Length: 350
Image (tube, rainbow, N blue to C red; front, top):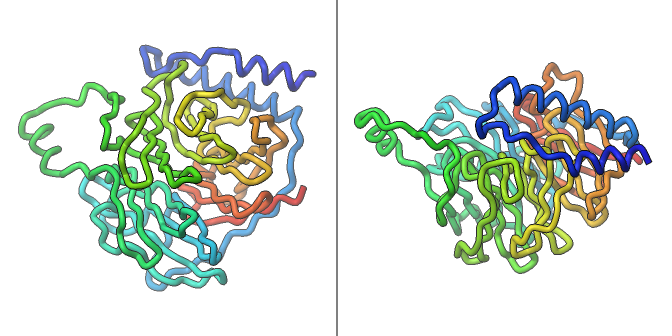
């Protein structure tokens, strides 16, 4: 009864409107209160046992860097989209690289070398047809690459350096709206991609636009949902997305909730009690949500919390221990992180 009461209170409690007139002190107090509530939920929920394996990924003559995106294909090959390289992640820079490893974790090749769309890595996913999709937060693009390495589709467009120079340096303009209502056809620092059974594309978008986008299989933009904020109809850094069982699940990270939609982006409900969801993954039995603290929450498909596990401690970092998750099965996940510079295989043993 105590656990159900805590969950109910968390679901009903309004989130403070920080960032819409709230002070930094208010934001800190709200975050502290959310952490206290989350710890109370975890105290009454099963702690799940896991084994962790840091994968020995080596790239000849190179360092893998921050492992923002991880995914596997049907052949068991691992793709890692990392923030690495010498040229920086500023506008026009290129510090994002996509690497492939085989099923024995041996380095295979780099995909999309010298890509104009590789600026600031965020996610990589492999669709059921084995196309590799790259979500780049810095270039505002989502790129579809076929299994041979040929670019088949580019959604969004990279901001031009010359435009920024003319607007903000030469003309002295100022960007007074950090979270504008997004336009159709362009992204604002997108974060993740998923697909419906008919090939429909869903993109979480992102750090600026705070919305989810529905796009047809052939690239026609169809519908968007969400604006920046903390209430109904709002999102605050939608950071991950997954599809399954006729639903779209969006990790509304800074609102401490997962938003659930039908396949046409009609809102269904919130899932709470999972800390800050940085990444979500749907499996035949479960829904997984990963928090930047390294905690992974296991839920049923209706959003009921079944248990949680702590990962990634003892490696010298305390934040961004989970950036993205890839579910290989109901009990095996792969995890990328911004702070640890590695990929971990997480196996649930109960």
